[in-house]
Length: 116
Image 1 (cartoon, rainbow, N blue to C red):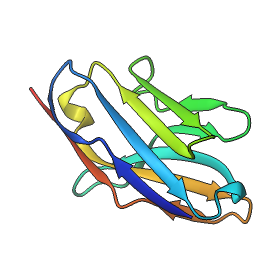
Image 2 (cartoon, rainbow, N blue to C red):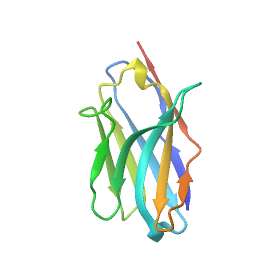
Image 3 (spheres, rainbow, N blue to C red):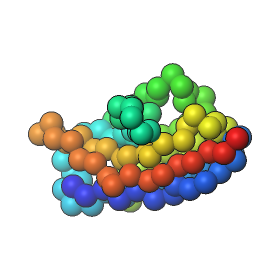
């Protein structure tokens, strides 16, 4: 499975961005997907997760009500709609896929910078 993120960039506080993650390869084996983020000197943290066939989504408390994760199975693409962005949302955002063999795949990351 290969994952390619896009959609990061610079935005002012209060603004919005939409991240995309296009999956290719053995996408039939994917069980769940998610978005993680990481800032320098800190551990990578989960932002949102979604179960592929059920569509069940879970969010970190810090983004609930502001971010929405979604999945277009026909396009093998996952999205993260980010609204009401805050400076503390600044991070490199990574796409993740977890397959039936319990293997994790990661994208290359996309930078999101929120200015105050």
